[in-house]
Structure formats: C-alpha cells, structure tokens
Image (cartoon, rainbow, N blue to C red; front, side):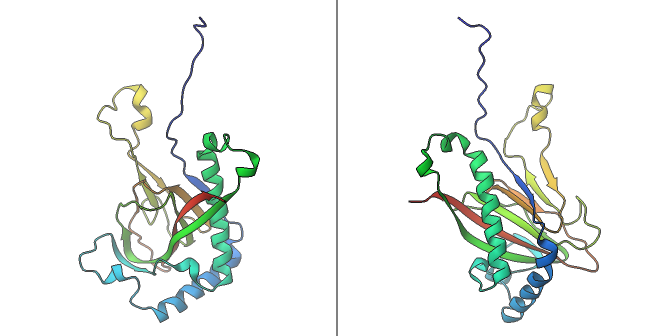
Length: 222
C-alpha cells in the first residue's frame, strides 16, 4: 500500500470572474447617451421602483429587465463581450464535466435571461440579495464617479459558508465574511447567481454611478 498517496478534492468551486473591457473609453459616452434617452421614454423606471413594499434598493433609477433586447449596436457588442467572459468563467468552473465531453460536444450557447441598467443617485444603494433562474450574474461599471473606494459605491459579496468555528488557523479561509471589489469603469465582475451580494452606498458628488447588470445561463448547443 502506498502510504504517500493523497487525494484532495476541490469540490463546489466558487469562481468570480474579474475582467476589464479595453474598449470602454470608446463606448462609455454612447452608453450614457442611450441611457438618458431611455429614461426620457420611461421616466418612472422599473415597476419595482413604484412598489412601496419593495426594500431591495434605495435612491436610484433602474430600467426594465430586457435591456439586451434594445436596438442599439453598442449595447449588442457589449453583451457579446459579457457573454464571452461568462463562458470563460463557466468553462473553468465546469472543467471536470467539460473534460468528459467529446470535441464535437464542446459547443456552448450563452443566454442572457435578464439585463438592466441602474443609475445611482446620492446615497443610492442595493441591499444584499441573490438571483434565481440563472447560473451566472454580473455587473459592468459604466461610470463610477469620483472618490470611488471600497466604502463608496463598490460591490461586495457575502461568504456563502456558515460556520461558528473560525478560531484556529485551519479556518483562516473562513475569516473574511465579505469581499469587496472597488468599482472601476470598464470592469466586469461575474459570479454564481446564488451568491449574496450588494453595493455600498454611493456618495458621489459630481457624477452619478451607472452600471449594467445581467443574469445568464450557459447551455450545450444541440
């Protein structure tokens, strides 16, 4: 018997993709102009904003959930970029299953189920939540304003593992209850949709914070 044989299985990996779109400085102004036009057509925003019982957000404008269906070439190109990045994360996370497929089977389709944009006003915030009915969620920072920091307008994720014993060194990986990503223009974050997340209150003065979010699935092509 080989006493040195060891098997350590890395089960249920939690992957968060962190990308930067180098074309963002080129498309930013056109995106912002489109959003201004959108708000003029739908000044009341998403129906959630008119629901007095909804407490998932505060002091912001939110579009409907079908942004990816808008007839805008810049948006379509951006969603194509987002889909490509989601597929990159999905392939790494699902590598064990993908390795079992034949080469002919390794053809994938990324579906945008929902997408929307949010414009954060002074003190705007989205409270902790998660998404159902999809495998991946994302946020793309279009405009972040000034004085952006981990405490101002950034996105945070809450540790998914519940544990009361975090005192010994072996539990160091559970020490961080939340992880914060600072908002940066052109940055794209992708995460498993079950992961609870939210945004720090935005205290911008001159510019409002604008983001695009989406929920996506990845399927094998027939």
